[in-house]
Image (cartoon, rainbow over all chains, first blue to last red; front, side):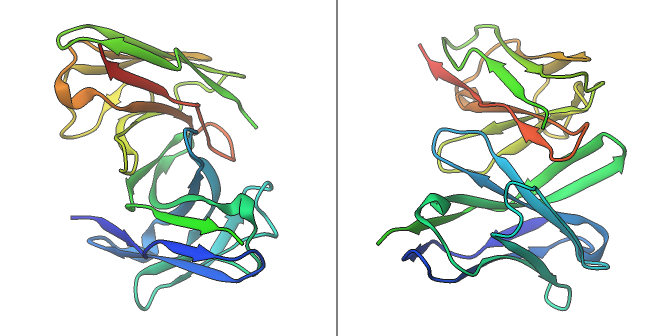
Length: 122
Length: 107
């Protein structure tokens, strides 16, 4: 069974650094892209970016580039999303998801991790 | 970015009702459209890929249709476990984008 298990909820102050994780199992971690998505309350998910653990190729949504860093450690089948300096506006639930892609357009997210709630407040 | 617009934002239904949710893309996206179901406090779950392909384990009361810019998710007979929020997502272009969601509530 493919599983993505995320790290627990975080409470941070503005300006602090943060790194959340997504541990995977049940499939070849190096052969699938892993995506990170943000979901604000009562809104649809937003795509932050993706990484391919096999060669560390990483791509970002321009809306998030420069503010977050996506990485992966293939020795422990785990992906990461990190901030050097969080802001109150980063408060949201963050999901990792395996990207399944067969060809152009045949591309979706399945399954998803359970989500990590990040709260940034002074 | 391609904008995805869902309607209605919410609807009320009774068990056994037929429900239709619409998703419109701001530009042509072929059939590169996926549907997800999200229950409160849970992660989204993939229901349908490339507009019409039902995922394994998803009941046949769910169906998807459409191409180009207009897509429909239909629940032919609502069951108690179908009360949730549904999102469409385009995979035609990067970044992939999601609709704002349609909440299906019990009448």
